[in-house]
Image (cartoon, rainbow, N blue to C red; front, side):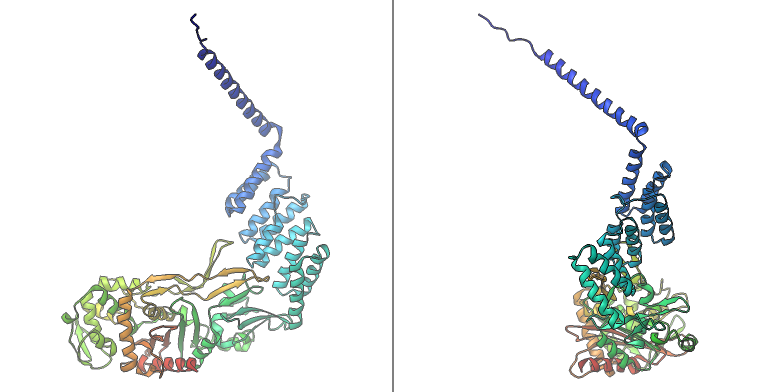
Length: 611
């Protein structure tokens, strides 16, 4: 008997089609229901979606989008206080305290209650962790207006008062936090610190790299709110607060949002700074010391200087402000000088890496002067026969350097100016991650001559001199120290920085400096060749007055034109030559020649360190 299998594929297909249609109908019904609910059933849902969107944008740092969403929510429901509260936090993060206060108060007047949407305690804690106490205080204050027994908010506002020197209020709020949570250890720890600070009458906030205090905020002395431990020795670093004129300079200006309250550790070494001050004496100019391997600024000093501890005395301020030698001027980073012969390091670096044949250039005859393109070109003395590059650097012969410049040409010389950091924006500040902004301590940009048109201009350029007024060759003392540091660090120029780390009132790390290269200036082989020549400059050449027994120093002198008729005395160096711990730049501002003025200052500095 033959059995036939039933034909089922048509019924199966019909079954799945029916199921698909039912699914589509369900989806359409759901979407229609949601549409009706969203548009007609509940204004609160749409309002809450806008609030959630605004809060998410706020957390991501998209403040303009957050403000837009909060405003849309207000337009949709003007009497609901939540969006006003959110706007307060958004404008606060933008740094607009006036608008933040306005919207926080508006939210409270509309009957704002404690909620989980706008998290004031969390936002306040973020600011507290970042050491931004005025921001944190506003968030914690709003939190306490909504929930007065929140021990975390009480602790947070106590920390803000502690950081800003309001110790009586801080002690009260630390105790309140402990009232509502007796086991809260951070409050108990900070309470003890606040009571100790009150007994000492000061909060220390600025330190050198080894923890030696450089500045404190006085809690008792109303007339002198700040004391600077090294006073005039670090005046251009610490700066000052001028209460009467409502002005500030130095770190007091650049780090105003972080001072006082946070512990700011600088790269400065007090011992090195004192050695610099002693060596510089009363010579007008600047002295910078770097760690060539990291870029850390170990010392920075300018002469004449001033006393930040006395700046609020009217007579003293007038005396300083009218001083024609400009004691307030931070020459190390805010004044540009013609580099003179220290720039010959760049010229010979370009020559070595261009592969020029030295025999095609030397020997050259130096008669003390010559003529290029109908213009007189001078050397500092008659050197006679200059046998090669090494002799040209050892004697700092301008004629020899000029012929090196002719061999390499303007494009190559300019290329190496750029490799050594000219036309580069230097900034020794740091990056504020929370607010996504650079806290700038800018350095004036060093410049080099552009487009040398003839042999005279190229000769001047090769010797670190300005060929024409519209083609300046200029460098800051900080950048000059970087030239020496790059050679000492096997050709790598490190990014300079002044701030090592910042910790908040609770000891939490806010910022830690990143050591990073700025420029790969030259190869290690070229750096080694230049180092040998710089050692010879000090051992038997023009820089012998920088020689120190027991210490091998690699240096280069320089002399250039001053603002008026005087000469600027340069000396840059690194030591110990084979494992450099220090790279230095000294400028005697219209004090004379580098070999006579700056080189002996370097010797005095290294002798002081060796003690």
